[in-house]
Length: 186
Image (tube, rainbow, N blue to C red; front, side, top):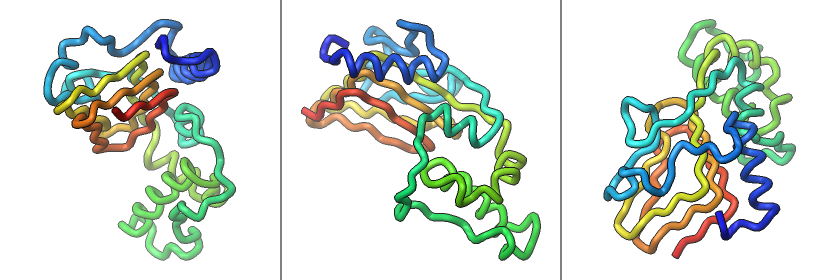
């Protein structure tokens, strides 16, 4: 993390602490054998090259806090579901889809706009878990592909720096949140 300024280092450490990591604790270091492969994945211990720390999450509000997403009053980018009063069939696919849409809107938009869904979200989608990853640096070499989000759970990544070589690739395949203080595309 030598390339980080003091403010970058402080922000990195603040996110690591929010995810429950102790100072200096990482889920991967630069000597991990997977880093030398052409393709490596982050995810669950039993299905990925690099496993994360499991953090139990009891509600959508806890998930939003853990991820560190602020409320967004400007939310033209957010897909909000119909109000619950317009949902006609309890336990229908339409209602289940609306609950999932509301959960995403809660996280990336204004939670007040889906407040009527919060109990349904918590009842149908929680408790759950998050896989957290914390590392000073991630370097993606030429010809190398790094895959994030393979577990099927929400995954939260905290990197001090990410450096991607000209023909390196980062592929995201699942629900992820990536925090990085300095990103360099060579």
